[in-house]
View (cartoon, rainbow, N blue to C red):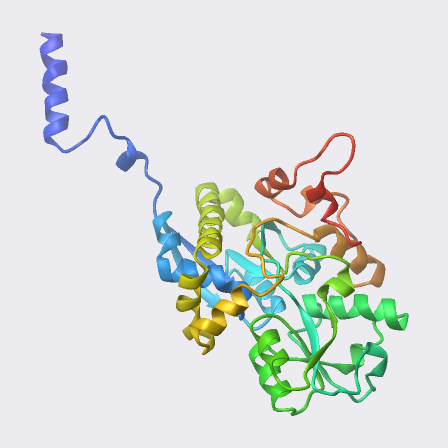
Length: 339
């Protein structure tokens, strides 16, 4: 009798539509809404690809896209709860961490050329800039601001030597102002605006990222709040995977990526492809330069303290990526510092 009952129950379960051999529908995680804060430029191509290809949705996430004009604005979006994850330069990330923002870096986000461009042929070094020459960059504390401070310390003897020259502008506005030669003499910017400016007759760089920092670095980091990381671990893992997939797709499909991205920037697919393949462009989630920026920013007074180790500012998946080599730092560990 007991055996008959067991068989009957099993049959009823199957009739009721429960697939006892497939636990996917039973254990599937609910769709998680994720608020994503990005900015302007080719740096954010992986976000554009993920949006167009529905990559986050494939991982069970429902993205809400937000776009800001600077890393400082992204930082405020994360602090206010408008965003769960955001993409910003290492400096604004560290400024927030120093002020107690509950977040850490989840991944590195793209290595790109960064340059201070001018149309004035008489300006070939920082020492040629006059006190009245205005320099546009996204905001105080941005990557560009700290790079300028690094370069100023080397060349002019003071990290703050050019602070009175600064004007805060989003990249598109800064590029438009420089190309039209209105209001500013120089613009510290990223692709595609950097490449568009350098294509103008007589426009040239005064200094660049490698000259200032000493080596390439992650232009952005993907930052996740502690609340999102701790309370939605599956969604956090899916976020990291989705970004990695979008990044890999760009690397494997540059021409298709150019066709997809060209309308976003008002460029031809051919020009967009040339920008995606420009020397120095590297779509990677590897982190570079985190501790090098931290050490300089502490020394120059932009933050009150630097992290004692990477674990203070990076989630576990990023720590695993960098590793900890016995007997001396690995090449990836060394690339966290300045040369």
